[in-house]
Length: 333
Image (cartoon, rainbow, N blue to C red; front, side, top):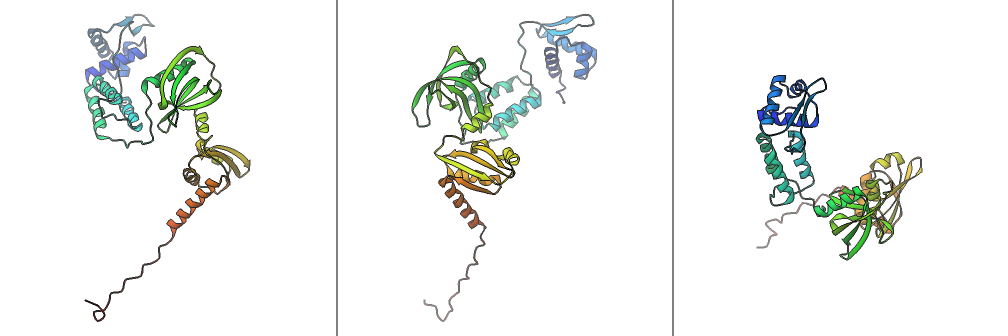
């Protein structure tokens, strides 16, 4: 990786190496910086002149290390800084608005970067636009942080939660994990209020109180559990027989469509539910294999309608008859 050749950048890299490798020697510093041992010692002296307590230990196991109680500056490589900005763009956050929390944070990062790197980051920030994800839901950062910390500490929480229908509920839950899926944040938890496993939308949590009672989290796969939950409990039950091997379909069938079961050498069954048969039919079509709708008249109708639309799109339009132009003798003025 190529680093900025300026003395300031080399001094910051020296600090990063000492902080990340306590006991590093002057000759190893020189090798990592691409300079002589003497030059490496000069960079250490520069850091000391700036008031940083760089300690040196003599002997075969000696080297440089950072003293206690020092607050080091934030140090990014070009790749790290740009990757952070790109990740924010991928999430469709508004990083151009300096008054918003994300734009403000990126501005702070830019201010502590070396000038040449800050210019590159600002250029990316100004010139690249992300298409807004209309399905994205931004949860409250403070509530999200509290839930993540409760998950990590295994502490029971009380939620003030707004349901999809707009009703408010107070729920006592054991927060197992927070899962981000398609720009939405979900909390996988055990609800003591309903005595059942639940998947809640974090953006619908309006307040959270972390209690002192702890819990033991079961051995779960959070992503798989959330995706499976999102395929259950909807209005219309579905069952589809896929005429393809289970091993092949298991790799490409979204868990949000339901649970896949092997029923033969070249067949598998997909059981789920949906509130939108039209969407479900379009997702099935993406699988690209022969199939039979076994259960779900609503889904069967949606599949038939999708098939009719596709067939109509493939029809060759009939040639239009050329309009005859009336002769001058027969025309009426």
